Length: 417
Image (cartoon, rainbow, N blue to C red; front, side):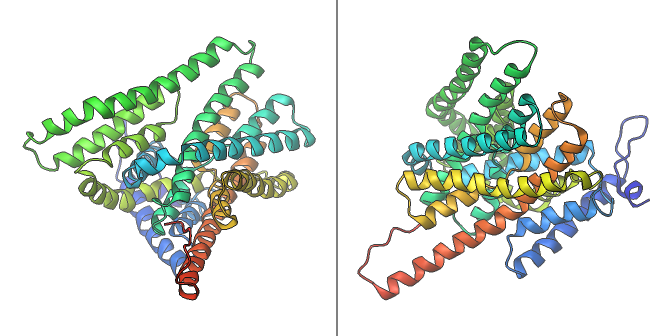
């Protein structure tokens, strides 16, 4: 009954009924109350929103169900979150930490991929399913992590730059591996031409971004000054973010990669601060809450009893493997233990990329509905645990950094800021 009251309905003309307005109002109200409670008890605000999705979704009360408009709002939410992350990033710092980011990205994908593939085989899954499960848990969700980095003003630190850079490269690595896995277990063998084609498209995307930023964007911004329209800068920024997201998706990359680079390019311009302030308020008030709640809506406890061992073992591995990959990458790049722990912890969250992959696996009959539910639960567990652990690690480093100068004023401390 509650689900029917708040669910999405369409009449014969295709127009949305009033129920979506009630649903959005409920999501916004409940997430802000939950975020406030989470902050009061020392948790990241995003944890409150994730728990609202589980509580009000099909897993428990069934008040809110997944729908086309909820999905659309959540897609816009994650794009805007990544666009804001790009706006807050420092391009020079990202360039400086490209090599560390690449190593962290490779280990962050490689360690979980190998471990989960091996354990999936031990659980009796065939090679195709095992490879796909390994790929699912190799993915990282930057959109969840970025909320903690923003909350603690950690985006522009050296660790923050490596985290963002490695997560972006992580996405690219996973997409390449996805193509390899699907072609290797499909009816036709892996084609070196298709692999090179995918790599070529990714390379072309970044070359075009560089050329656009260097030669076209300055001309567009110059022309924008002559436009007389209300909120022209914000409108241009949003259009830019959505269009670049579309092109990234069109060539086989994640749309959030395009959104991030749109923000990164605009971060070097004079309109950046104004655009960030205006878009951030709308994003955090409406679209981001829907996105975080939508993650919880994917959870359903039906048929979980037979998968309890799978869920427990894989939840532990989900945390340990990503942490280990990121931590090793940090240490190999010369970061100290605290910084390496922050980098490792930041990669634990799986979120939207893993959910997209597990849905793809179900549609291609690589995994069963029962396994799908168990993996979704593991993904959500890692998504909730990750921001809690990350906030603890960052605050620990910040407290240490504040104490050391007082005891040794002459010491030069390499901090994260």
